[in-house]
Length: 190
Image (cartoon, rainbow, N blue to C red; front, side, top):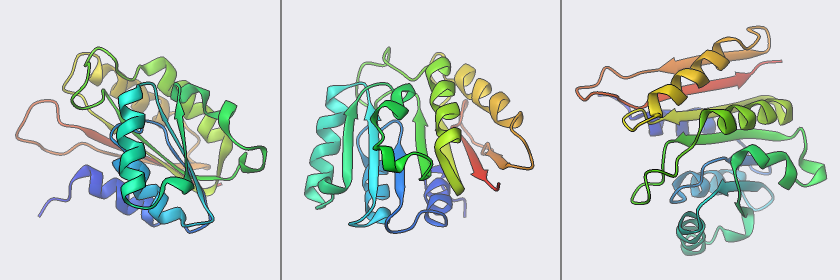
């Protein structure tokens, strides 16, 4: 039985993220990963969750409220490239995990989507703030215009990371459909 990429990403993050940790959902979307992270960090942890679109914040806020997790999350309406602008001073260098879902907000305007430039900027910032051990997961949805290009840019960037400091794994499922999503995991091993 094949495990979905989302489940694989969640399993990887679960092995790294503990109660009391700091995490980032760089692309909150409808809030599923934000909720997942908020459960893992517990009452003493913090999740910073980013999205450009107001509907994403509203859906995520409601999901967190319904699950009693709102107080653990800082919802931020801004580009994920601005992560460092929003971190509390005592959280810098302590981010244990970050999650990305690259593409567009399901059910919304498909012309508003993540872009390679801002995604790579966010990734570079997160690497400089990532605790060790730490992990970044990215699921790149490639079936829309620009999706494969962004996935390729992220994979190219990830493959250039120091093998002494980071372990990179890329999972591209043998799918029956064209343009399957791709999972990129980056683990800090400094």
